[in-house]
Image 1 (cartoon, rainbow, N blue to C red):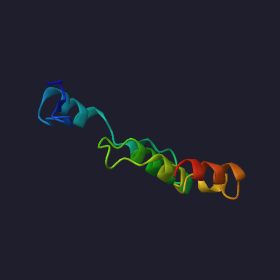
Image 2 (cartoon, rainbow, N blue to C red):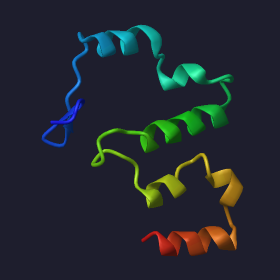
Image 3 (tube, rainbow, N blue to C red):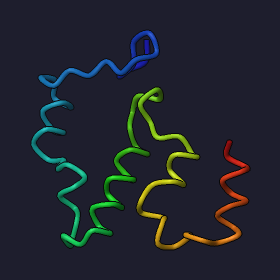
Image 4 (cartoon, one colour):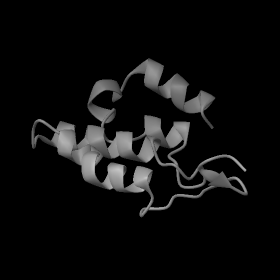
Amino acid sequence: KQKYFHRRRLDWNDNSKAGRYVKDHIKPLWRYRLSEAKEHHQFFDLLEKMLEYEPSKRLSLSSALRHPFFLPLLRGSKAWESTQNICR
């Protein structure tokens, strides 16, 4: 058995020393936002979905590329269209 995994799943005890440290010292990702601008919300939404621990819930590459955060940068671009075809 690895320290934090059991049967390939996270085995985390919130009441352990490590668990208490995380609860007391680590703040949620969204609290690092420096602005309330739409782009900041979209970026942190994308980042949170990409960092999802559970692989079955994690955002796929093709879904990440279609996330609203990227749309203003790539809308109408030939590179965007070819990237979409590769990720299918």
